[in-house]
Image 1 (cartoon, rainbow, N blue to C red):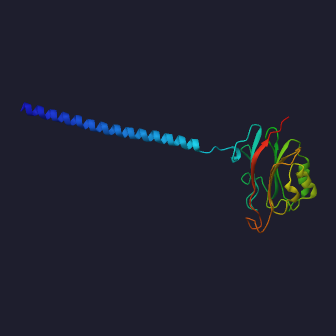
Image 2 (cartoon, rainbow, N blue to C red):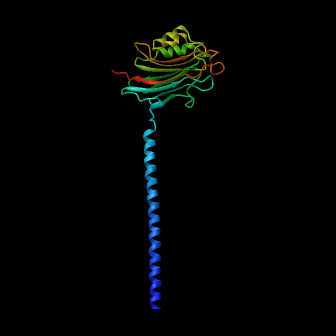
Image 3 (cartoon, rainbow, N blue to C red):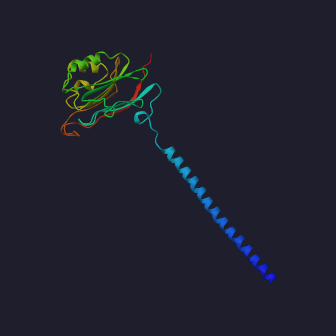
Length: 227
């Protein structure tokens, strides 16, 4: 009887040890798999982060060099969506900010610091060009001038207004017409024509919207004014 009892005890201990061993092996495999998955996910996340394209100021396509201001702007879309002007990741004018309107929208920026000086819009369909002319004459040397049309920016323009804008570096202003879309970035005191200008003519055969051309967009890097 004692021998049988001892045999049963040995068998029970053996079964316990075998069960413990099997459980420990399974647990170790699961732990290894979990750790493996964890490290794999971490490595994948790192790859995704490293391949995600960087975001530059105002959402432009590449970073600007030192001593340059990043900007991006768009004209209005028909008479529905207003223009948008962004400089150094700050939206200066937009429909969301509720500071845009029909005609020519203008943002003035300090050419040395990049600080906003003023924003205005001038109705060139039903308004008067005289206030716009006075505004243009008052712009100080060294000021960055950003302009974008909304709906119609040309009907009330006269030769004097066009000349003053041309002196800021615009080329297209001389033939800006009814409901053309136009964006421009120039400066007071500029000695050459600005490279920052886009213009699409209102043409019923090519217009994207009924009565208006497609939106024009532009981005770039404006050199900071140096003393």
